Image (cartoon, rainbow, N blue to C red; front, side, top):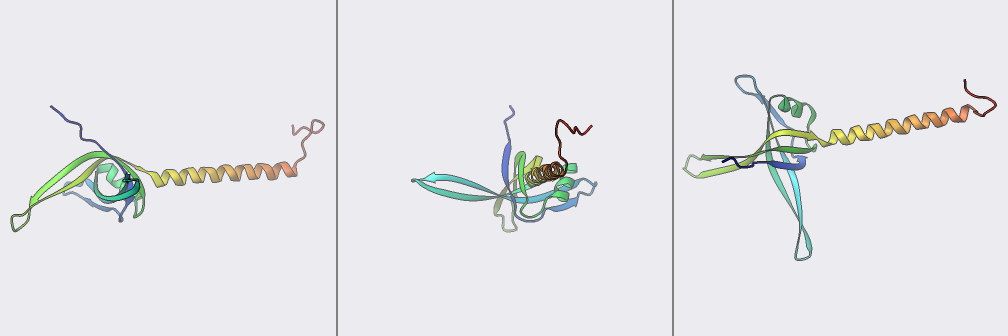
Length: 143
Protein backbone atom coordinates (compact mmCIF):
# COMPACT_ATOMS: atom_id res chain seq x y z
CA UNK A 1 0.00 0.00 0.00
CA UNK A 2 1.34 3.42 -0.99
CA UNK A 3 1.07 6.37 1.36
CA UNK A 4 1.00 10.05 0.55
CA UNK A 5 4.29 11.86 1.13
CA UNK A 6 3.79 15.48 0.13
CA UNK A 7 5.34 18.64 1.50
CA UNK A 8 4.34 22.19 0.57
CA UNK A 9 6.45 24.91 2.18
CA UNK A 10 6.96 28.62 1.77
CA UNK A 11 10.03 30.36 3.07
CA UNK A 12 13.15 32.37 2.38
CA UNK A 13 16.58 31.03 1.48
CA UNK A 14 18.98 31.18 4.44
CA UNK A 15 22.04 31.32 2.16
CA UNK A 16 22.93 31.13 -1.51
CA UNK A 17 22.16 27.76 -3.12
CA UNK A 18 24.95 25.21 -3.56
CA UNK A 19 25.23 23.72 -7.05
CA UNK A 20 27.19 20.68 -8.18
CA UNK A 21 26.95 17.79 -10.61
CA UNK A 22 27.01 14.09 -9.88
CA UNK A 23 29.67 11.89 -11.46
CA UNK A 24 27.32 11.10 -14.34
CA UNK A 25 26.65 14.82 -14.94
CA UNK A 26 23.23 15.21 -13.31
CA UNK A 27 22.72 18.69 -11.86
CA UNK A 28 22.10 18.92 -8.10
CA UNK A 29 21.23 22.07 -6.19
CA UNK A 30 20.68 22.27 -2.43
CA UNK A 31 19.55 25.15 -0.26
CA UNK A 32 17.98 25.79 3.12
CA UNK A 33 14.85 27.80 3.76
CA UNK A 34 13.49 29.41 6.89
CA UNK A 35 9.75 28.95 7.24
CA UNK A 36 7.71 30.74 9.91
CA UNK A 37 4.85 29.18 11.82
CA UNK A 38 2.52 31.27 14.01
CA UNK A 39 -0.10 30.12 16.49
CA UNK A 40 -1.86 31.29 19.62
CA UNK A 41 -0.91 29.78 22.95
CA UNK A 42 -2.90 31.02 25.96
CA UNK A 43 -4.13 34.08 23.98
CA UNK A 44 -0.57 35.07 23.05
CA UNK A 45 0.77 34.93 19.50
CA UNK A 46 3.72 32.55 19.34
CA UNK A 47 6.04 32.32 16.36
CA UNK A 48 8.43 29.54 15.50
CA UNK A 49 10.95 29.36 12.68
CA UNK A 50 11.81 26.07 11.02
CA UNK A 51 14.96 25.60 8.96
CA UNK A 52 14.56 23.00 6.22
CA UNK A 53 17.02 21.62 3.68
CA UNK A 54 15.78 21.32 0.09
CA UNK A 55 17.31 19.27 -2.73
CA UNK A 56 16.54 19.78 -6.41
CA UNK A 57 17.69 17.75 -9.40
CA UNK A 58 18.28 18.12 -13.15
CA UNK A 59 16.73 21.15 -14.92
CA UNK A 60 15.06 22.37 -11.72
CA UNK A 61 18.47 22.37 -10.02
CA UNK A 62 19.92 24.50 -12.82
CA UNK A 63 17.04 26.97 -12.60
CA UNK A 64 17.31 27.24 -8.81
CA UNK A 65 21.04 27.87 -9.08
CA UNK A 66 20.48 30.56 -11.72
CA UNK A 67 17.60 32.49 -10.15
CA UNK A 68 17.80 32.01 -6.37
CA UNK A 69 20.02 33.72 -3.82
CA UNK A 70 20.08 34.33 -0.10
CA UNK A 71 16.75 35.86 0.98
CA UNK A 72 14.79 34.68 -2.09
CA UNK A 73 11.20 33.76 -1.27
CA UNK A 74 10.10 30.36 -2.60
CA UNK A 75 7.18 27.96 -2.53
CA UNK A 76 8.44 24.37 -2.55
CA UNK A 77 6.40 21.29 -3.50
CA UNK A 78 8.07 17.96 -2.88
CA UNK A 79 8.41 14.94 -0.66
CA UNK A 80 9.92 14.42 2.76
CA UNK A 81 13.10 12.35 2.92
CA UNK A 82 14.76 11.01 6.06
CA UNK A 83 18.46 10.22 5.99
CA UNK A 84 19.93 8.02 8.72
CA UNK A 85 23.57 7.39 9.61
CA UNK A 86 25.91 6.46 12.43
CA UNK A 87 28.87 8.51 13.55
CA UNK A 88 32.32 7.10 14.38
CA UNK A 89 31.23 6.40 17.95
CA UNK A 90 28.19 4.42 16.81
CA UNK A 91 25.71 7.18 17.63
CA UNK A 92 22.59 7.16 15.48
CA UNK A 93 21.67 10.35 13.64
CA UNK A 94 18.78 11.35 11.45
CA UNK A 95 17.96 14.32 9.24
CA UNK A 96 14.73 15.32 7.53
CA UNK A 97 14.91 17.16 4.20
CA UNK A 98 12.68 17.97 1.25
CA UNK A 99 13.25 16.61 -2.26
CA UNK A 100 11.56 19.22 -4.44
CA UNK A 101 9.42 18.44 -7.48
CA UNK A 102 8.59 22.11 -8.04
CA UNK A 103 10.00 25.40 -6.78
CA UNK A 104 8.10 28.61 -7.45
CA UNK A 105 10.26 31.73 -7.37
CA UNK A 106 7.91 34.10 -5.57
CA UNK A 107 10.27 37.08 -5.72
CA UNK A 108 10.30 36.84 -9.52
CA UNK A 109 6.50 36.93 -9.60
CA UNK A 110 6.48 39.96 -7.32
CA UNK A 111 9.10 41.77 -9.41
CA UNK A 112 7.30 40.84 -12.66
CA UNK A 113 4.04 42.13 -11.21
CA UNK A 114 5.80 45.28 -10.01
CA UNK A 115 7.46 45.76 -13.42
CA UNK A 116 4.10 45.26 -15.15
CA UNK A 117 2.50 47.82 -12.84
CA UNK A 118 5.35 50.25 -13.56
CA UNK A 119 4.95 49.65 -17.31
CA UNK A 120 1.18 50.20 -16.99
CA UNK A 121 1.70 53.43 -15.04
CA UNK A 122 4.33 54.61 -17.53
CA UNK A 123 2.05 53.87 -20.51
CA UNK A 124 -0.82 55.79 -18.93
CA UNK A 125 1.44 58.72 -18.08
CA UNK A 126 2.54 58.87 -21.73
CA UNK A 127 -1.12 58.76 -22.84
CA UNK A 128 -1.99 61.60 -20.44
CA UNK A 129 0.96 63.66 -21.70
CA UNK A 130 -0.16 63.03 -25.27
CA UNK A 131 -3.76 64.02 -24.48
CA UNK A 132 -2.49 67.29 -23.01
CA UNK A 133 -0.64 68.05 -26.26
CA UNK A 134 -3.44 67.07 -28.63
CA UNK A 135 -6.80 68.72 -28.46
CA UNK A 136 -9.48 66.35 -29.70
CA UNK A 137 -13.02 67.39 -30.43
CA UNK A 138 -15.86 66.42 -32.75
CA UNK A 139 -14.86 69.28 -35.05
CA UNK A 140 -11.26 68.09 -35.28
CA UNK A 141 -11.13 64.24 -35.31
CA UNK A 142 -7.66 62.60 -35.37
CA UNK A 143 -8.31 60.81 -38.70
